[in-house]
Structure formats: structure tokens, C-alpha cells
Image (cartoon, rainbow over all chains, first blue to last red; front, side):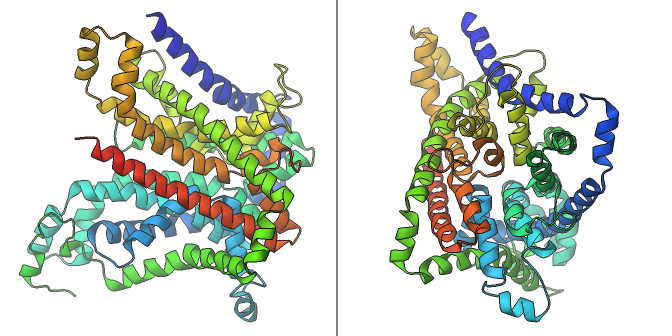
Length: 263
Length: 279
């Protein structure tokens, strides 16, 4: 009995001091001087531009990673494509690789002195230090989530229904749309939630390729860093609260759509 | 592609392959192109840059005193953090599966927060409670303890989420047998439960280790970036890129890439070992 309470107390105490109190304090700090300073911070043009850019990047990266995540999952589970183990490794890497290294890789490939730098410059396309580079960085770090969530579901549902549909004369697209997609939809939704959170919150990879042009290549996390170090802590806290609220909604959605109910 | 002979739809025994779900070549090709543009070509560019300078230059950059110090510090704090979170993560998983209390679902939801909270915000919130104006008088800013704290926050969910399902599925007969044979609860845990959880603890810990070694956003504010003292590898790389010293950035990045790949391979081995022990 005593053991039980000691374990509970230690586990919850750890969570409280590490997570709950610090995250709770940001809400208190942001509203310490009432609504007015918070409102001033979240209606500041820099804030609004950063929010808009963050959402624009997510709006490009999330759909692309969703569509290609599903295709890659089907490729890996249902087909014997050459280089399967390489693709599998590539799907694990964004979880393990430092975001700063991701940014550097993109500079070396698409930056001015990178592999395709001269070609891109001739074509008049700026990748690094502008929007396309930030989208690429975001896509890299959030690439695996949908595929990783869909793959176990595909294995679980098997192929009987898909074969039945084909036997009854359904084409590939019809089979996918009417049989496969409905079966994997919860995995897809869960993957999209994780992808979106990562796209909105990514700091390191985006920081490396953004060039930090205020009002042009500044996303929400970059704004938080600049305001915090520029001693506009009130502004940094306000932006942090907005991001923390997005994160909180994310974990609530994650709980709602969790594929397997363990607890 | 519209009509296909029926016999091609016959199931292959013990295979998930299904011609019915066959991908049009165009979709597969586009996906490979996408993977190449976003991940493979940039990675190849990094390796190319590392090889391009030659081995001596690569080694000189890695063995530069500040780079070596940063790499050692990164690995050391990451290992400390993984050991701490292997313990607390297993404990949290245990409490979430075996205990029952009001608000358990809320706690279970909260465990995922580090996955969703932007890393830079993690740094900001930790400095509120454990920074220079700490209301409880604990200031870990610009110190190695601060790095450990930030990494503990970031890697908290990994072990919990890998141990939880295993613990949930674990057959309680064995524990009851151990207890009925006179084993004290701790002995039963050590001899019966722990061996079953070990593969999950190791693979969750491995992911946490990889994450900790590469972590940047949550550390950058709290560490203060003091060379030889609180400068971790990712922050060092960032500084090198900003100051246009790309060769040094490339060399340390390749070391991080190799570490990440090695950890992923080890996790793979542990998972295979774990499934072999299932039956």
C-alpha cells in the first residue's frame, strides 16, 4: 500500500515539476499584467506575419507529407520495391537526426554554393533563406509521421477486402478510395495531427535555412526566440502561449484519435 | 490498367502483397522523387561535402578542441538523461497501467505534450521556473544541469510510450505465481516483470538517446552556448553555419548523422531480440 502511494507520488511529482508547473507558468506570465499587453503582442504586425507564414508552410507541408506518406506506406507494406530497407531507414532518420543537420544538408544541396545553387539561381529561384527552403526543412522533419502510422494499420487489415473489390471488377483507384482509405483513415488522421504539430513547432531546421528576415522568413518559433533574446519577454510569452495552446489541442486530439487504446 | 485478369488477384500465401492495391507506377515514381528531393539528395550533399575536403581535413575538424568538447558533452548529458528517463518513464508507465486515481486520463494525455510543444517554447517555459528569476530559487540557466533538464523534458514520452503497451499486455499469471511462491513484490518485479519490459525500455531509451543527441531548440536558450562548458554539438554546428565555417559544421554534422544511424540500427536489433523472446 505504502509502495503504491510512493510510486504514484514520485511519478506524478516528476511530471508536475518537469511539465505541468513550467507550462502552467507561461499562461500566468503572459497574462500577468492583464489582457492589454497580451492583446498588443498578438496583434503586432510581426506576430501576425509570423503566424501567417507558419500556417502557410504547414498548409503546403502537411498535405504533401500526407499524400506521399500514404503512397510510401502502401509501397512498403504491399509491394516488394527495390531499396525497401533504404526507404525504411529514410523514414526513421528524421526522428533521429538533429534538425540543425537537416538544415545544413538543405543548404549544401540547394544553397547558393550548393549542388543545385547555380541552376536554381539561373532559374531565378531562391530556396535557402526564403520560403521554399523553409518548406523543405519542415517537410524533411515531419515526413515520416503519416507513413509510420498507416503502415501498421495496412498490415493489420490484410488484403482480403482489397482482393474482393478487385475480383468484383473495381479498378485500382476505386479499390483504394472505397476499401483501403476508409480502413486506414484513423491512422491517417492520427498521422496528420502529429505532422501538423511538428510543422508548426519546428525550430532548428527552419532556423538554419530561414536567414531570419523579420517580417519575411520569420515563423512563430523563430519569433519567440528573437523576442525572448531581444528582451521583449512579454511578446515572447504571448507567442509561446499561442503555441502552447496549439500543442495542448494537439495532445487532446491525439488522445481522441489514438489508434490503440492502451491505458 | 483498367481491366486485369482475375488470376492476378489470387492471394499470395503469407504475403501482404495484393495486386488489387497495386500502385500505379506514376504514384510510386513521384513518391520516390519526393523522398529524393526532400531527404536523399540533401543527405548525399552532406556526405559529399564531408568527403570532398578529404579525410585529414575531416578529422582535423572533428578533433578541433571545441568540437571534441561539444561532442563529448552532448553524448554524456544525453546518456545521463536517458538513464533518468528510463527510470522515470518506466515508473510513469507502471503508474498509468497498474494504478488508478482521479485524473489518470489527464496525466496520460499530458505525457504526450513534449511531442507537441515547440522546442523553443520548452526552453522558454523551463527558464520561467528554473531560470535566473526562478520563484523557487533554482537557477540552472547557462549550466550543464540546464541542458539535462531541457533534454529530460524533450525525451520524457519515449520510454513511457514504449513500455506502456507491453506492461498492459503482460500476463499477470507469472507475477501471481512468483508471489504465491513467496517472492517479495520487488523481487517479483526484478525477476519476472523487468526482463519482460527490458526490450521496450531499451528501444524507448534508444529513441530518447537519438533525440537528445540531436536536440537544438529546447537547449539553445537554456545552455548559454559557452564553449567547452555548455556548448552542445547541435548549437556548435549552428554557430559554425552562421559564421560561414561550413567545413567544421559539415564534419560535426556527419558525426551526429553516424551516431543517429548507429542508434537506429541498435534499436532495430533490440526490437528483433524482443520479439524473439515473446514466444
